[in-house]
Amino acid sequence: MEGQLREAVDILRGGGIVAFPTDTVYGLGADSANEEAIRKIYAAKERPLHTALPLLLSSITQIADVARDIPQIAWQLAERFLPGGLTLVLYRLPSISPIIAGGSDKIAVRVPDHPVPVGIVEGLGRPMTGTSANLSGKPDPLTADQVREQMGASIDLVIDGGRCYGGTASTVIDLTTEPPVILRQGVVSREDIGSVCVVSMKEA
Image 1 (cartoon, rainbow, N blue to C red):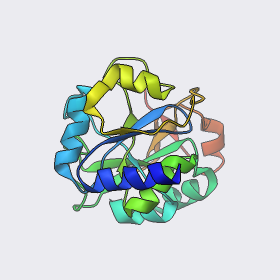
Image 2 (image 1 turned 180 degrees about the vertical axis):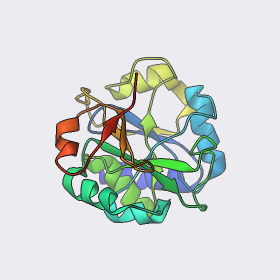
Image 3 (image 1 turned 90 degrees about the vertical axis):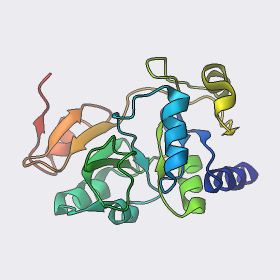
Image 4 (image 1 turned 135 degrees about the horizontal axis):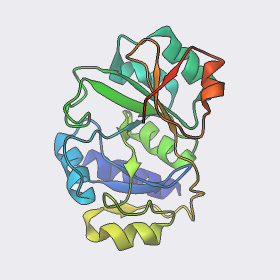
């Protein structure tokens, strides 16, 4: 696996895209500093450019590398729930490509609870995209073979980590509003978040 992690880092640094197992489904990564590679992600997934891509971090300290005006509650939530199933929406730094953010001034970040994406990001030295490795609108892949079936030769490397567990997606909370708003209810419950801060829910 260490050899595959090094290969993945080399591919990302060269502008390629890589699929890898995560704590839920297989993800698709590109170097967050390479706009051409980010566009490859959109093309491979057949995903509209106005739809933002989340970023995967190796630790909560990397939040400050991608976001600005970070409220104290972000650090409190990160300390409590990350690594794990919580995605934080924050204002992005100007150094983070607006293509990743779908043209928005916000960015979604998460620290996954899985050694493969964390190891790739550590080797790369900066965040990478962490969207699911599927064609838009198609089922999320739980195996490397399912990734290959859907995406074929558009991916430069698929790291086979066995079958992912699937299950509930991460909870997404927007911390650019007051009070924070849960945009998607996932594995971290509203009650758990409510034990840290006052929160509202996005209306359906």
